[in-house]
Length: 636
Image (cartoon, rainbow, N blue to C red; front, side, top):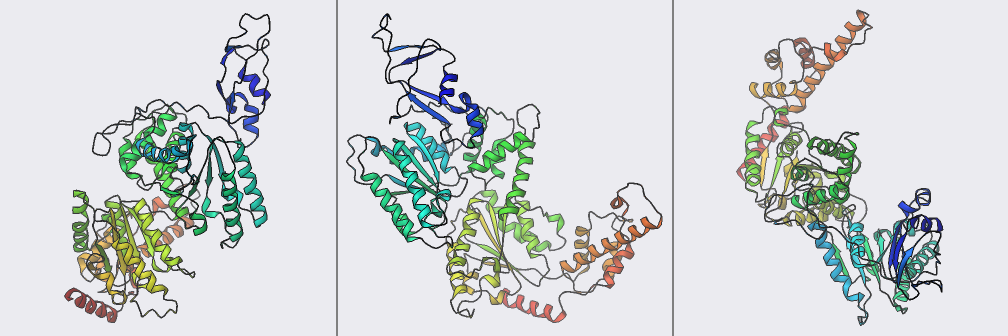
């Protein structure tokens, strides 16, 4: 502390009685700041209580003076409770990027913050203000709950609100307070609340409150919850001159009712729109003195599932990709940063992503493509949402149902959330229904999005016939129906399903407003469709006759084959060519460093060898059964 004050007063400073001095530890106490981990007080405030002059001074009764090192003496007294100066923010001009004028953004904010933040900040201030009045006669405790997914900017909202209202900000993570034993947790909790009393007037921010009050096995800890309630009551029963505001933060996880009822208000952090994300990115760049020539509205459109923390990480990663190159940031920097983050997030969290399957990767199925485009393109072009309808693809296995759904997501730049029936089911009571709710919640935060239910018959079988004693499957089907009915007419969520057994699906799912359109994805029995599929699968192959040899290959194929069968032919032909190239490479003793893949040429005999080893995956009897099923469903 002494070293920080000494560094601050290296130069003469003009002080007045009751002045509040703000000293940044990062600037004036760098040794302590960078060697003590995360400092508890990165910014320290001092208040000038009195000024004393020597008796021969001509300014004996003056209330202000210069403090000069070597001529003045500073005496540090005990800490006092006081409001801190409100943070002054320059108006946000949007210089990094100016949004086009539309209904959502008629003008940029003049408050220093984007409109999406300002809306939540003003609501928080409205909730807190009544408790700051000296003649406050309210007999309720100012304890609020802020709910929103991880990374949506809850802490930033509370911290900014505290700065604007002149309140100290104390951040406590309940994940660190929670200990292995109840006694240890109680001791940590009391230390936190004692520290809070010394920091008033302040906002106590309790992060991750959803993990509090649980045992190591995840069960409710009645003792901890009861202790927390009693300590909070005792905290507010004590007489104090300055206010104490408690704001707890939680994700969408349910918490015990005893803990929930302590909060007088629950505030939800809403998901951002495209224009709000663009405005937020512009603000994040401007606060870090970064400039860009990129069209942030296009960047924001591709980041529909990104939250506050994700947009900040995107901006910083785009800056990192410049690798010392001069600013401003270009469109390519954001695109590369986005691709990197999408791959990391999707792989680690199973988050929705835009797949890379195009129509040219799918051969045949021309009528199906036309029908799918007709049902999706019109709502997107007219921007009135998909409404309450879905699309069910049924047919034999291996016919390309999943591939069709991925191609739709790619062509229309929609996120793709694939859900397999067995992945949703859970052994614990209520967990399966919760998984269904989370699927739709993830889709809403990632809109526009396609939810693709693979193996739908295993997820939504006929109710009353599943045979499970607890009725789990019946409750899952009911929850799925409720979520589908809950989609708004203007929703940007499109639901697709795939199944091999549509006769096993609960009939309620097939009524209008749900999976009201069923499309049969059949096998390839005609020559043109087989040739189209082979051309799509081998378009990246190097062939001697530039694909003309596929005409001969098609003539040797069985009458009825699926897309998976044709993929097996193509992949086995490629492997045959690779083996032959390797043998030739070793036979000629070629030791020079050359790429072997450049010398791989797939020829007719490689395909014919693969065709001879092909066993069709769908028998004639199964084909007849599926044809009969198609006739029955199309006539019903």
